[in-house]
Image (cartoon, rainbow, N blue to C red; front, side, top):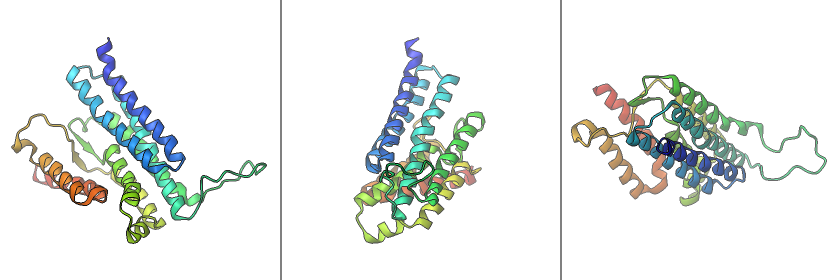
Length: 246
């Protein structure tokens, strides 16, 4: 009985990490929120691996996994994008409302709510995943953890790549809104993307996986966090190439 619960416990660690990330993102501590999302994605990878290794896959585990992903890779990126849009628009969302302020008064620009499109698109993608029997060995549309990496790369780049040009580009409201819309499209696009699950170590069967991992490693070493968006783009382009050659 305990063996069956091991993958679920790992999934709950994913959910816990995501919940902490939500609190941090609401406090505008985007860097620490990113760290906990990364931790959640780590647990998300190993819960499925544990379930397969222990041969204890279950419908409960599938549903729990999606619920955890909704928080870690769906809600948090939406809040982070909301915060980035507020920052781009010069709004201080952490400033509390004055005592006695109107019940219906808000202290953020409504246009920043465009960031929550990422959360809505993630929810729709996860719901489709649970009822789509085509996604057993590959994905249809960008997986939510990959999309979370794409969005959360922005605060990492802003913090570790101090450049006026980079900051001006990222903190452009039109860019952020456009990326939010593009994120929703990528999440739910009818495009087959390969999974990083190795059934064997054969170079012939996994050449594109090895190529992607090598490209990612070289990109991170050479360009650090600024490489992350390009790694996600490369993942999509390589998947399309593999699909066309199949």
